[in-house]
Length: 468
Figure 1 (cartoon, rainbow, N blue to C red):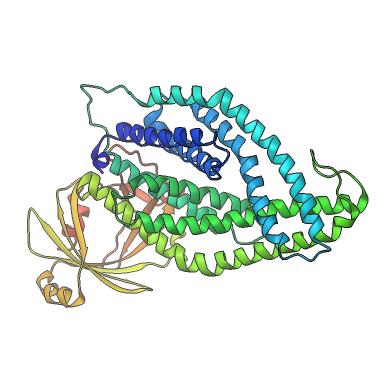
Figure 2 (cartoon, helix red, strand yellow; figure 1 turned 180 degrees about the horizontal axis):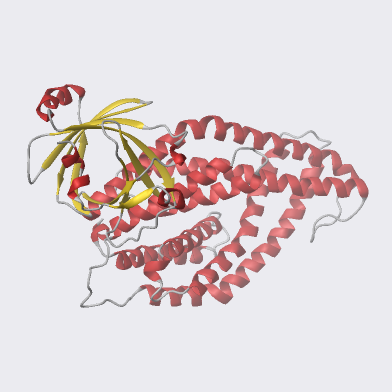
C-alpha cells in the first residue's frame, strides 16, 4: 500500500474517504426492504468511520471538528435500536421451534411486541438519516478532500506507517487492560467495554489488510472475541428485559415503555426464555475465558506486536528511536515482574556494530543477531533471530566485549519501559522506544523517583562501550 509511506495527514484522510464511500453505499441499500444486511452494514460503516476520525483526530483537526464526529455518532446510535431488535427476533424465532406448546405462546407474544418496537425504531432511523446523513456526508467529504500543507516546514510530517504503529500499540494496550478487568460473567459493564476496545483495534487494523502481513489473522481473532462478548452482552440486556416482563405478568403492573403488560399465562414461557439466555451467557463465558483468552489472545498479542514492527520498518526502514536514563536504584515496581536474563557480546567493528544476544525467559532461550549504526536518539537497527549453532559459532569472537543484565519490562501510558539491571557491574538504566523523534517523554512518577539523569546519546552508556 503506497499510503504507508505518505504523510499521516494525507493517508488518514484517504482512508477516511474510503470509509465514507462504504457508508454512502450502505445508505443507498437501506432503501431496499429486501436487503436484509443493509442496516448492519450501514451501522458498521458508520462506527468504523467514527472510530477512525477519533483515532486520527490530531491529524484531521485542521478541517474536521468534533461536531461532525458527534453527528455521525448520533446517526449510528439511531441504528442501534432497530439492529438490536433484529437480533432478538432472530433468536426468538430459533427458540420457538424447540419450546413446548405451553411455553411457545409467550415467545409469539414477545415477538409481536418486538416487531411493533422495530417499526418505531425504523421510523426513527429513517428520520435521522433523512435529516442528517446527506448533509454530514457532503460536509465531511469536502473537509477530507483537502488540508493545509506548510511548504517550508522545519520537519516533514511523520509517515503514516510510523503513526499507525504507535496507534495500534496504544489501542492494543487499551484492549489488554479492558480484558484484564473482565474477570466475571456477571460484570457486564467490563465485558461491554472490552468488546468496544476489540472493535476499535479491529477498525484500526482492517485498512491495512493486504499491505501488512498478519492483519487477516488478527482481525479473525478479534471477530471471534467480538461475537462472544457481544452475545454475552445481548443476552444480559435481553434477559433483564424478560425478567421485567415476567414480573409484570405476575403482578399485573405495566412492563417497559411501549409494551403492554404480558398476560399471566405467559409467565412460564418467559421464564423458559430467561433460563435459556442465562445458559447462553455461561456457555459464551466458558468459550471466552477457557478458550479464547488462554488460546487466541496470546497469539493475537504476538501478531499485533509483529504488525507494529512491520509498520515501523515500512515507515522508517529499521530506524530505532529511543531515550535512555540513568537510575540510582531499581524501581520497586519491578517486583513481581518476570525478568529476561540477557547475555550479549559484540563482534569487532566501528561504523557497523554487530551484536549477539542470548535471551532466557520462562518460555526458553532465544538467540539474536543485531546490526546497529549511528548514535544518539535516532539509530538504524536491523535484527533477526538465529540458531543456537550459529550463535555458538560466532560467540567466541565477542571475547572481551560482553555484558550481562536482567531486563524488566513495565507498561505505562501506552509505552513499555525497559529497566536493565546489570549483573556484572553496579549500573541500572531505563529505556523507552518511541515512534517519532518529536514524541515527548514524561517520566512516570514511579520512575522519576529513581532517575539520576538522562543519558541519551552519551557514549559512556552505550551497551557496545559498556561491554569493553
